[in-house]
Image 1 (cartoon, rainbow, N blue to C red):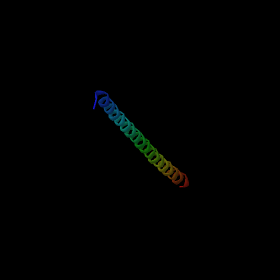
Image 2 (image 1 turned 135 degrees about the horizontal axis):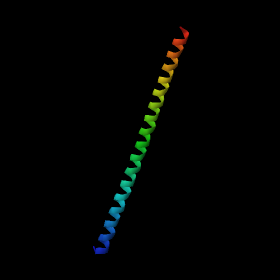
Image 3 (image 1 turned 135 degrees about the vertical axis):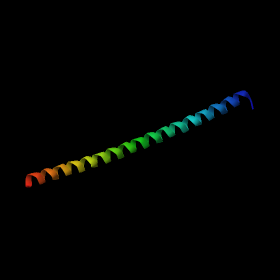
Image 4 (image 1 turned 30 degrees about the vertical axis):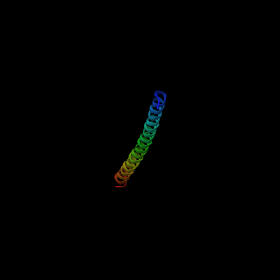
Length: 64
């Protein structure tokens, strides 16, 4: 095996590593996006609950 072949093999290894890391980065980005959507959904439902509670309290105050 000549030096040129060694360089080609090393270049291929580095290219494969770069592809793997890029794929991992995409997976992490998808995970972060999913977590963000989940948090937004949770906070949205929490805000709806608080609004509903405030509406109920206001209704109780004015009904009495």
